[in-house]
Length: 279
Ligand code: NAP
Image: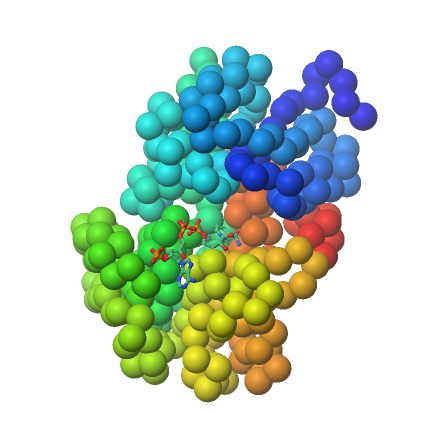
């Protein structure tokens, strides 16, 4: 039940009607009797600064940021954590003392936690990320932090992948970071042990697979940042049919939320309730 003391959280994006985050977070609060409420808020891009100021004035404990605001959020916070700065994207904001806003990125660390749940260790592995947008950048930062030996970035717009590699250069200690154009995706896939789709491919019915079907073999791990309500993506379904180990966008979504909730509440979230709400 909402009370005068209920602490407020939410997600801002546009459009926002499809979001699963309120269901996921509120399920955990209800299961544990925690006095928090999480709401979805549709914010037009030109109203973002006003919305952020409003949330701060209303005393929100924190909020998530989703498409298309993750990059535009960077200059609107008072402090940025390293993952958000390197990734160039904020997906979580926490209000500190005096209303100071801290911008965080839990997409990449959520991906790593989803890998850990699936028993996938990234240390020393050769990883290919398809995509060079916000999700790809956040995952790139996180997998480099896990000590991958080689990170290959492939993207339709090659210049974006090159810019991401440049941004990562000071951070990629000990790892080889290279860029491949999409017409060399076959070679890039052959060289990698862990394949990660961080493009939009798979969001719509009938999208082509992001990686060639024949390359999804049992010595690889196949991961998808894309998630769909109530069903897996074609990439994940295809890989599982062939007995390939997978990490789905749904588990990444779960763990980016688990990490955000840990930061906002300072307590261990009810992962089972959150996972159940997404199922
Ligand atoms: P973004 O910043 O807009 O980047 C989109 C990326 O997809 C770009 O690299 C773009 O390539 C590529 N792309 C788009 N359409 C393509 C196509 N038809 N063929 C090949 N590449 C294409 O978006 P984002 O925030 O990174 O999100 C990417 C996906 O990850 C979305 O589905 C999003 O929902 C998902 N995501 C999931 C989670 C999670 O928790 N599971 C978290 C964050 C994001 P160009 O550079 O050439 O345009």
